[in-house]
Image (cartoon, rainbow, N blue to C red; front, side):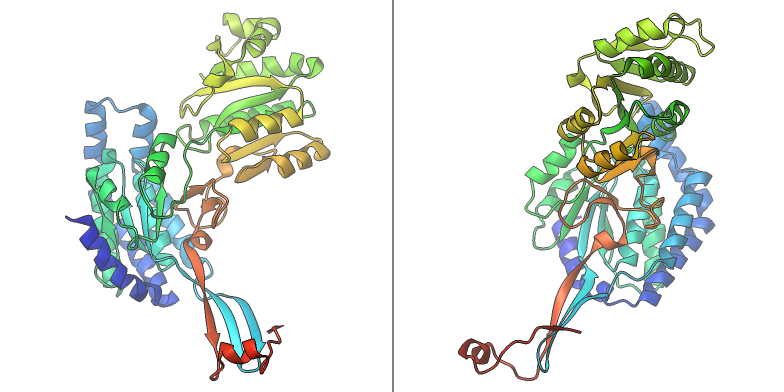
Length: 443
C-alpha cells in the first residue's frame, strides 16, 4: 500500500464525511457497538494471538496489560460508544453571529478538522475509542497502532470500517496502516493530513514533531505528581496515592512522583503510614537521600520487614533520575511547601496531571492557580484524567500543549471552525472610500 495515494483519496471524501448528518453519524456508532458485541469471540481469538506473541517475545508486563482486550475492556468501549451517541453534536454550532453592516452577516461555525492521523500505543481499546470519536466528530482517521496488537487491531478495524460503510459512509473514509515504515510515509503527507496525534514515549513524540510539517497535537511522558501538604488528611492522602499508582499502573496518568512537605510533626506520623501502605502493596520507592533517611528514622519496622506488610523495597536516588516508570515504583522528595512543589512540577513535570492533598483551601487555591498542567486536582487521584471519566465519551489522547486542545481530547478537541459571510453585493471598496460603514452588531 502506498500511504500517500490512500490518504489523497481520503482527502477527497473528507468533505462528504463532514457533511454527514448527526443522525447518520450516530447510526454508524450504533452499528459499531452491535457488531463489536456480535463478534466478540473472534476479537478475543485474535487478541490471544497477540498475547501469545507477547509471551514469546518477553514483552514487558505493563505493555501486556495494555494490549489485553477482554470482556471488561469490550464492555468499557461499548459503554463509551453509547455515551458518545448521547453527547451534543459538536458540528454546526454557531459560536459568533454578527451583523457587520445591514445585509452583511458573519457567523462562525464549528466543523470537522478533516483527515487526522493517530499513532498510538499497544492498546486495542484505543483503536475503538479513536475511531468512534473521529466518526462522531465527522473526521476521517488514519490509524497506526502498536505492532504488539497487530491481530487485534486488524479485526477491530475491519469490524468498525464495515459498520460505517453499512451506515452509508463513503469508501475510503478510514484507513489503517500496519508497517512501521508507513509512519514515515504518513509524516510526508502534509497538505493531505490535517492533524497528527501521536501517543507514546517522549522520544517518539519528539521524533514525530521533528520529522513532519503536519501540525502535531499530543503528549509524551506522563510524569504526574502528588503534593502532600502538612495539612493533608493522612488516610485520605495514602488512599489517593495508592489509587493513583495502582489502579492502572501502566497509564500515563498514574502518579510517578510524590512531593511531601518538610514538617517534622507531620512527617513523624505520615511516613510510617505511607511506607507501610507501599510495602503492603509491593510498591517500590525511589527517594532522595533526605527522604530515605526519614524512613530509617520513622519507619524502621517497615524497613526491617517487621511490619505486617513486610519490608519496603526502597533506595536513595538523585532526583534527576525521577521519571515515568509505568510500574509499581514511585519517586519521592521533600519540599518546603506549596511554592517549592509548584516550582518542581512546572520545571520537571510533563504538564499532564498533578494533584494536591490538603485541607487548607488557601494552599489548594494557590496550587491550582500556579501549576501549569492540563489537569490540576485537589484531594483526588490523578487517574481521573480521562475522557470517559470527564463525560467526553473517551478520548483520542491527552494533550499537554496549549494550542487548540488541552487535557483529554474528546469531541470538542476534534473540531475547528469556519467563518461564513453572507452579503447582498457589498464590496470592500465602498467601506475603504467611506461610502459605506460597518456597524458591528452582535445578533
